[in-house]
Image (cartoon, rainbow, N blue to C red; front, side, top):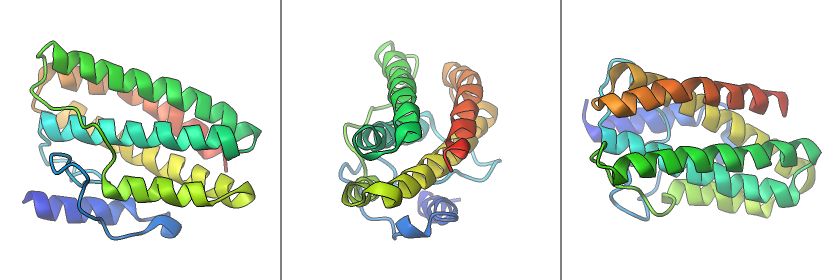
Length: 184
């Protein structure tokens, strides 16, 4: 499967369940970051670089959305957001450490893709119940996709230390997914 087809399938999968944010993927701010909002088919092998980029961009998005939730969200959003910032900062630190120690041959993105930035911009425009609902949908959607991505890489990844990290991280993200589902 080509990267373009992979991105199209992944983007289509990501938009299910969140019509308020269903936008066509745009070119990324940083061209080295793949524009993939979903996950590859279960048998598709994802490179370590694409996996790291995808996880880091998702984590940056979750942290930025959580910071907004700390300002705009209801009490349950704020509690969840504090854990999100901590959890996703740890995930990014783990990956940066693995890249810096050369256990992984990957680059770390420094910014959000255009699509994720648009989703943050949309959240910034909302307040009250509209914000709470949109934030909750984003948290659920992102953690569902993140769980699938981690699980897929743990099974089919191309880098052993990264596969081990993904396998160890899946239960943590499933817990976050469970907490996100309770926000509804």
